[in-house]
Length: 377
Ligand SMILES: Cc1cc2nc3c(=O)[nH]c(=O)nc-3n(C[C@H](O)[C@H](O)[C@H](O)COP(=O)(O)OP(=O)(O)OC[C@H]3O[C@@H](n4cnc5c(N)ncnc54)[C@H](O)[C@@H]3O)c2cc1C
Image (cartoon, rainbow, N blue to C red; front, side):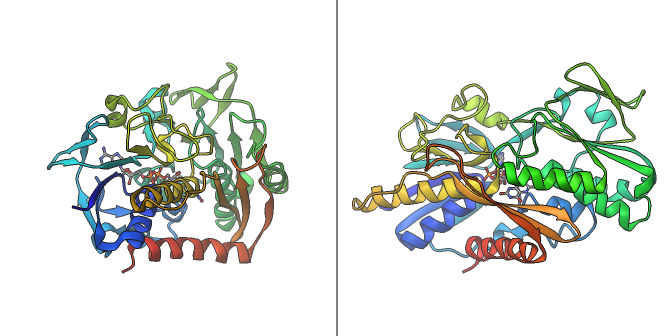
């Protein structure tokens, strides 16, 4: 009987692992891929949605189109995970895996920040980005604050990208002179892993009059007074507050006992959890890499290699390299790139390629190639 791999979550990590295992084993493996949604959306597609550049339909890749040997997709809500038994229970059934992989990403806790739900907006969820699409055209003047409430958060460059794209958007509408844009971050520079990328972002901020408030966080929002209270007790006025919400593991992961101090600890060489034949990849883990799709993908690749060696009982798998390239939108259709390597050397290496129109083309191809590999026949 073939090995049954149960993969919880069909995001960056789950899709990459599914495609790799299917490519290696075909019908000689049984993969059950479970996600509560009917479609995958790239994190960066939220920018397309919020600025009305693409529709929800255009940014959706439907799981029903996955055509891969050995793979069965189930659109179901996972309600419990028993890592010792490798048993997953959903709203529709129960799955027992020989191997279990948790790739459920990070959830948002909007309610944890007083005033956020009542007085704020966000572009970190599809629903939030869709709401903003209708709100942004009503903004003609005032203070726009893009604030990271606390770390960890997904995609380190995304708050700065949001600010640079807002600058471009308001400029195109002719209202930019009447709008102040401020970015609040818990970090001293935009991307601590890459000095050159941070320098490029801060240079663009200076050029476009975007204010940077580093080493800060948000304690609360006062929708009546229209102020943001920062961690040091000071306040900032706002007319439009765009918050990067507090991130947590999904409740089902919390209840499973897999998480320790908030996230799932994993062996950094092969992403194994402390439960036999149970792995975790991506944002749901405390692996020493940023929470970003590209690292979820490289982690999934490492697990795939590890499982291929284990199941074929031959060869050796390379340890997880924690490497990946992150694209950064600078506005004016220009995209830069950071090529980060977190784990292979004694320290992090993250050179930056300056923003360009060619970078935008590369980013487009990046998305298209993933869609082909994950969903194609
Ligand atoms: C605005 C923005 C821009 C970004 N830009 C980039 C970028 O340019 N490059 C980059 O690399 N990353 C980017 N990211 C980050 C990236 O989207 C995430 O880090 C990445 O998706 C994480 O992959 P994952 O597989 O760990 O989790 P996810 O992709 O989040 O997948 C988790 C899956 O689990 C499912 N799930 C959760 N709970 C349950 C449950 N109980 N039952 C069933 N299914 C469940 C979810 O539906 C989801 O499909 C961006 C994020 C944002 C918000």
